Image (tube, rainbow, N blue to C red; front, side, top):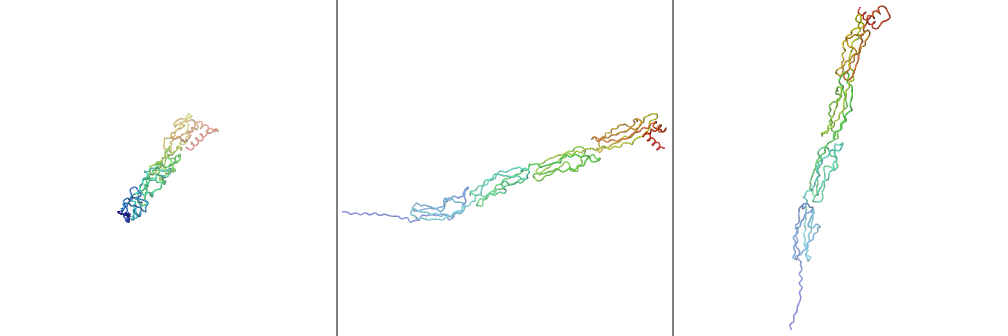
Length: 364
């Protein structure tokens, strides 16, 4: 009989070999374009004799690292519980400039009666890869802008100090005419013995929303105006070419009568054997302050026969504006009957007789 024996051997192989993990000590990089992070994927060099390894780290970012400094500890473990670790410092810098888009240029008229315009515009759209921006402006939204051109600049910055700017132009135009108020129409008489009148009138009231206005007129106060109606015009102009015109009338009236001097009264004797006499006198001359033609009308002409007694002669001078002046003198004709009555001592004595007597006595 052959006796045989058998045994079983259990071989247990223990893996006491650590995995291998290596990483760079520090990575200094910039954010990915348009992002607030940097993708760092090829960081680790990992191996293990078992062929299996699990890697974990103390970051919740995975392999997307935010802007700033992040310290990451990586631990590699194999199925046998062997482990190895490495420490990595990741510095992500934001070198990307923010983006900002300003509104279009704005043109606006001044507010009524004001030298400015209140302006409001769509606020600029500002973005940054970091997701955080700070926006400032040279001018406040809804503020007053003066007449002319103003450049409004917006500046956007991110936490890393990257800055971008945009601007737009605000043009405020003054298309508002000045305000101008002329005096009321003026009516005045000519100065004494002159064909004109010195008229002093108040200057018009002129104002403009810009605060600046110049005034020009066709006449100045204290000018002389002829007989008739003159139109006085004034123009107010602001620095931006806007104008306003007003007008008023100055009417100079000639209500002064012409001047005229009549001849002295005349005393004459009737022609022998007649009851009439011819009387002559110089025709009066008339003048008028207007300098125009003076029309002369009279009741009798020189060189005609006048009857016994007293006749009143009238002359009337009328200027072209209807002003009239009248003067008069008398023609007295003395006849023989008057002389006879005086000589015989009858009580009938006329004024003509007394005049005749005075003339006789004067001639003796």
